[in-house]
Length: 202
Image (spheres, rainbow, N blue to C red):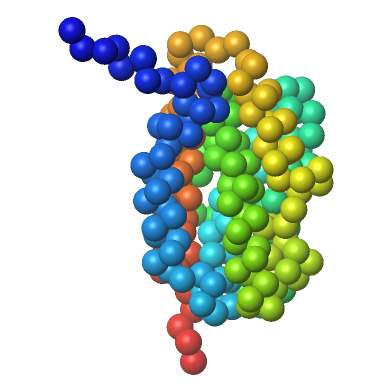
C-alpha cells in the first residue's frame, strides 16, 4: 500500500505554495546568478528592468478593491514606482510592456501571484547588501529592494497569516497554486527579455 500523495502536503497554504514552487524558484535563482547582476551597475540595471516589468504587471492586482479588503495595506506594498525611480537613477529607460502579462485573474489566482511578489521581499534583504557594493542603496538605484514599512519579516507574516486563513474551494486552491507557479515562470521570461534587450556597449 502506497502513501497518499497528500500525506506529505503541509497543512498551511503558504507552506504548500513554497513546496510546489521550489523547482521554478530554484531555476530562477540560478538564472539570476548566471546574469551576474551584482558584477556591474549595467548588469544590475537589467535586473531592475526585469523587476520593473514584473511589478508593473501586478499594479492592477495590488490596487484591486476586493483584494484590498482582504489585505488592507496591499496597495502600499507595490514596488513598481520604486523600481521606476531606480531605473531613472541608473540612467535606464523605462521598458515597454512585454506581451503575456497576467490579465484579470480570479481572486485566488491573483493571490498566488502576490504570494510570489511579496515573498521576494525576503530575498531582497540579501540582494540589497550586494547592491550596496555597487554604490547603490535604498534611496538610490535599489529602492525596490528596500526594507518595507514595518519590516520584511512582519510584512511577510502578516500576508501569509491572511492567505492561510482564507477558506478556499478545491478549484480556488488549484487557482492559487497556478498563480504562484505562473508568477515564477513569468519573471523568468521577463528576466531573459531584460538581459536580451540590453543596449550594446559602446
